[in-house]
Image 1 (cartoon, one colour):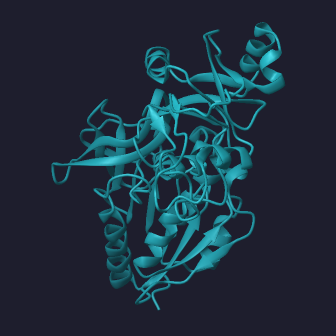
Image 2 (image 1 turned 180 degrees about the vertical axis):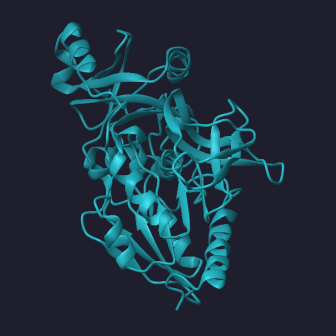
Length: 389
């Protein structure tokens, strides 16, 4: 057993269907509530923890041994840990990596993240796959001792992810910018719906001056910047609860500004084009999700984190009911045929449901940042529109 000689305090994971898993406290002690989801990555737990898209969710790692590489300042994808809680089977007793600056346990504790270890994560994953993601809670310390019925009542009284808008919780409060790296080709307005640091760096590396904007900005504000392009980031919550962002996107698209969206930004493009969205049974979360690029026939292994998807036929060319012309599905999941990408045929706009910044994960989809750069340059050459100085 890779645990310290002093046995950690007990903890319990409670699901809304009444299922209980008793284990050991990990990280901070207390109580936390959230939707339980599982992530399949064998590495990259620090990027997962600091991904704002996981806000409001208790994340279970399917890999059995977590924490071996510790934690450091370089792999943070935002300024803090966003998960509501953390579930692992066997935490590392001591990190063993030259980049480690502190233990994962102490990192969780310093961010007040309540976790649990020493439980059968494989059994819980199978349970979620059978019944779907559900509300849950972790109880340790003094909260472990409250009655089972009270714990279950707290879990069932927790917020559901369906219909929940979390953009305001994760977005920047003040706008900020990053300079273009190398030759400047223009500027991109980034709507921060939970953006990751590596995404911004990849945009800057493609020659964009990056303007990161709060999720509350208006279309008028965006257009006043005269950007070469608009980018919607990943983020948590239900896209059906983000009407204001859909309206903003539609107005900027009608102004002829090129667009690229990832993850939540893909769902919002779908809505802007007139398509609906729906909640997946247990979502796609991990760094090994296979996706087919219909244009090339190439299979990409992608990093994903989403519980909602665009409701759109994956075959054929479709007409946007909101006036944006023809549109098609560009990518789809090889596991369950969920829409993984959208391409507009009459306007310069496209999106993908996964994380091409590959933090953490494979680099198969990193080319999409180059594709975005090419779309923006081609649009500027044709129309002369946007900031390309």
